Image (cartoon, rainbow, N blue to C red; front, side, top):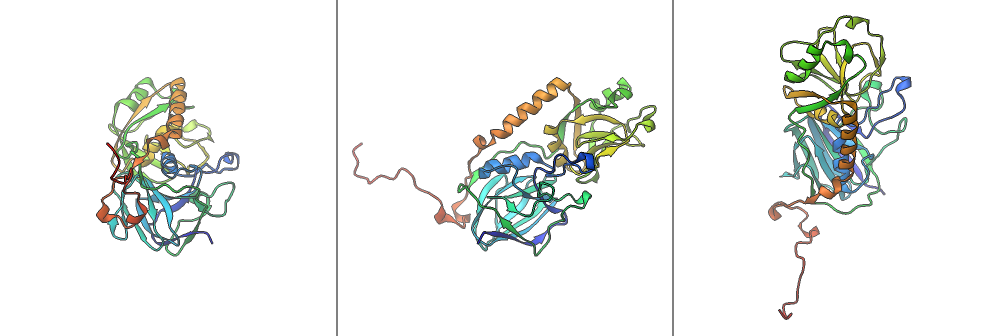
Length: 337
């Protein structure tokens, strides 16, 4: 019998996510998937498995979980207050979750989206080639208390690893490229886009995030005459009142608002994790540089496993002390110098 993960408590926005669905834009279904794709790669590196495996995404608040058998877990993305049977547990790390123990994940400490990974992934019925919930499209649902998820076969054994994450939980600089309507905006407006600070507004979800620019919104002549066309996550639409609105994982597939620019996919994780009121700066890059940056990030993610190091823990707070190899290089004591 395979292991299961039982949910005893869940926040209002806890869902199963993976890399999403590709190839359905022509029928009106956006990719969806994890809001922070870098967190998928980090968890995969910590557990030594594929980043395509489904994980639990927790927006703002986590839940309480119990495994039927000993399983490996990893915690990535926005740090959340976490305990195992009452003792605090390190984030951005891989751990053993013993059978019957209670893993409690509380509110986010910084950022927005935290992730719970399980060795072997979580085995649910795929829908259109993916296991992720896409609530905007009516696919799947939020996880809730009483749900029991099957755990996939885990081919790994290593735990107690730590990975120093890229700090993307407090805002910062986000790189953008020109989009289809960028040329309709005046040079002054385009310069202002990268010269003024913007704050992440409180209107935000998995579909999009509103930005609040210092000095008011951005405007163009004839912006209302833009014909509806395909849009993708990362596009920055300018709404009728001049507000920049960044499209996220569960955005619609067509839209008629003018797009002033598009965020690089490798920087969209920073946008997703920016907390309310965080300061953001947009920075223009040309297409050639954007392609080079994307390639560099892909190589970095593929190499994350090399950055994992041992997790140093206090022995007094280790529930599974006997599972550790605490002594190495043992000698008999009668060897010659």
